[in-house]
Length: 97
Length: 237
Image (cartoon, rainbow over all chains, first blue to last red; front, side, top):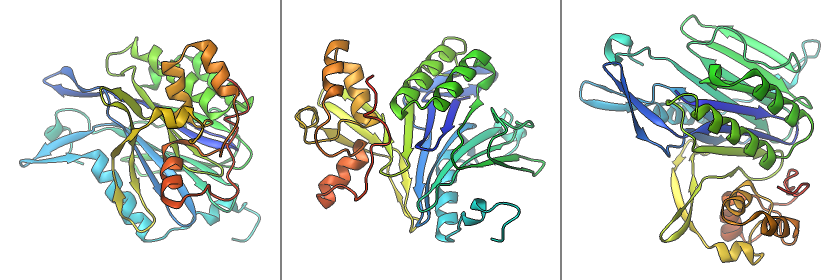
């Protein structure tokens, strides 16, 4: 599993993660990649962002390989094309949004 | 995602999502986790949201002037003192390069404590005003190569991951930005301390951050209006 460190401040946001990918088979773990990037950057007309992830990276099911990286980026693309807005998050509970 | 019976291990994952509004000074940090049950926040600052979907939890915080640092995945291997130091450093006004180096140092120490974490790590910076910046590069026999992460554009199209050759002489001659995480990480790696001080002290040329700035400069021939260097030039490495 990856170590994720995510920081947000007034001037910038920062996502830091290690790049190691390991595979586990029958309780044995081996390193399969030392330089894998686990970040996906995205943007809409209203905001920009980044997703970093840790956990199960890929798996095989019925002869087909699935990668979490692809699933996340597909999900982002799907959400972005629906053009959501984060404007309500700028409102306080006492204001009308 | 398939269950443990298919994968052989628990199908756990955690996502860290950061967003920055373009027009409003509102930043969000969201943690989506299948295994985390307690909020990851280091402070009670900001507007906090939480949703429990049984299979996974969502923890979200909206920030304006406040700051926050969260740790995920192999967090149990990060010491409380290391977490506190990073949070204090951010609140004290450290720039993105300084915070990136400190976080990178923590990753390196955690890598020495558990084999599932590697010492190699990557930083992605999203400034208040400007382009995304990374320290994703490597030195090859053909020279320095920069890497871009996967990018999802506003129209939903995906780009990358991609790599680009980088002419280091163009950077050091002053044609390219000097205040980026990308540039400083290269200088940090290949130049001695005394030379680094000289290079970082020079503050000439357009302040465009990183490989995205370079691409923008090449494609459009100008620096984005109102661009700021988000504090990277304020301090020496």
